Length: 225
Image 1 (cartoon, rainbow, N blue to C red):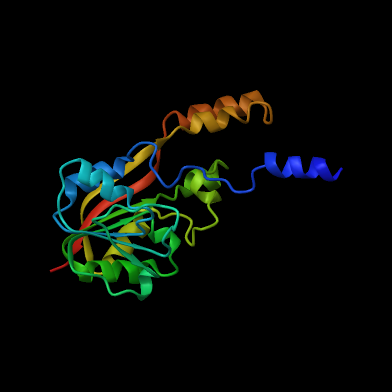
Image 2 (tube, rainbow, N blue to C red; image 1 turned 180 degrees about the vertical axis):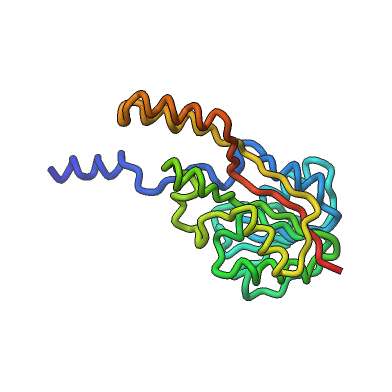
């Protein structure tokens, strides 16, 4: 029995690396960062600085600052990165041309404070990507979105109105607004085929065929005045 335990210990993996440290392919918001950045960049919630690698490989050649709560000892960061390790709510931001807040506002206790600090430190613009909250889809039709399952989120997505209100309260103005990542609600309905009556599935299909939902809100903002 003791020998079989040893063999099992060798066969069963305890730590999983799902590959999140590198992008499988550049997300849509990376291309928008390349298009809308104005020069030197501060990437808040930079993780392993994959955005820097993407920008650099596409001809961008300015200063890059990255802020993240942790530094991964087993990961080799790009040599030219100015990495700042710590809580973004407690760090004085360097002055840059563009602050990037990609998939970070939903993770912090006070997204308004983070947005205010970003608008103060930018010379030109702030780029934001956040999960969109589609309450009609959740409440009226009982469907859910993957970001709802992320236990690291302090906020369960943002509606369009909340996004505009948050930016307005922070003293910013939206210059460019996009919604991205079209949700195929019909696929989710298809999962219910063996659970709910076929007639109800058919009616829900007719409802959703005329409705469009999106996973993400992306926007470019600038300080008022």
